[in-house]
View 1 (cartoon, rainbow, N blue to C red):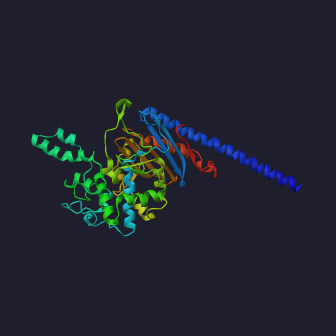
View 2 (cartoon, rainbow, N blue to C red):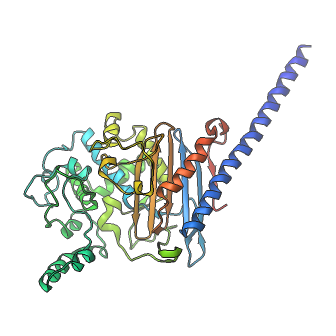
View 3 (cartoon, helix red, strand yellow):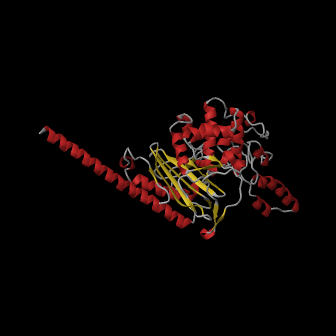
Length: 415
C-alpha cells in the first residue's frame, strides 16, 4: 500500500513537471512572438534597417533578439552580437565613472574644473564638475552654423562664422587618441550663460568630463571606462568606435530620410566625442550596464538616487509620454541620466542618436525591468513608442513565474 502511494505521488509530481514545462514553452513562445511582431512592424513602418532588442528582469537577461540587416549592401543580417553606435547612451557611463571617483574621494564636484583639467581655460566664471554633469555649465553643445550663416548681415559676419565653423567640421573627420585635443574645437568659445544659472544640453561638456576623469584618477579615460565599467558589468561586446580599427560585426550606418528612403550615413569620426558618445555596443551590454548600475556595483545607493533625480526639480515626471520625451530636457535630467515620462511608472536611463545609429536603454524601478533597443540608422524615432510596446508585452504576463529555473534566458536571432 505504501509503495502504491509513493508511486502515485511520484507520478503526480512528474505529471506536474511536464505540465509546467509545456506551459512555460507556450507562454514563452507567446510573448516572444509578440515582441517579434512588434519589431518587424516597426521596421516596416519606419524603414529602419535593423533592430536589436534586449530585456532584463530582476537582474537577468531574459530576451535577446535581432531583426533586419546590419549591412544592407552586403545582405548581412543583424544578430544579437552586431555592434551599434551608442551615441549619447555613453553619457550615463561617463557620469557613473565620474561619481565613482567622487565616492572614492578622488574628485570634488564643487571646485573649479581646472584642478583636474588644465587644458580647458578659465572663463569669466568658475565651472564645476557638478555643473558639467547636469548640463548647467554654460559650455555650448553643437553649433548650428547653417542657421547662423542664414542670419549673417555682412560678409564680415560670414567670415567670422566660418572661421568658427571650420575647426568643428575638421574635428568630425579627425581621429583622436586622447582627451585633450578634442577640446581645442570649442574651448575658446564664450559660455552661453553663467554656470548654474540655466540649463543647456552639452556633449562638449561631457568631452571635458573625460579630461577631468583623467586628471582626478591619474589614468587614461579609455583604461578607466574599460576596467571600472565594461569589465565590472561584463560588457564584452562594447568597444571604442575606432574608425581605423577592424571591428568584427560592426553594423553599417544609414540615414532614414523622408518617406522611409534609406541612404548611407554621413561620414563621422566619433573619437572626438568619446566620453559623450563614441562607442559601439549591443543592446544586451546596455542592459548589463543598467542592471549593474541599479545593483550598486558602481556607486552607492545614495549616489544612484542623486543621479536619477532631476537636478532641476519640477513635478512633471508622471505625465502622458510623447516622442519628445526622447529629447533631453532640464526637468527630466539628473547626473548623466535621463528621466522618461509615464503615467504609471518612473523610468530612467539614456538614449542617443548619431550619424549611423540610434539607441535607448531604460530601467523601470517598480518592475525591476530593463529594456534596450539599438538600430543602425539616424532618423529613427521609435525611442518611446517601441519600448513602450515592448514593456506592455512583458508586464502583461507573469513572466517571472513563467520562466523555468533551468531556462531563464531566451535567445533568438532574426526569427
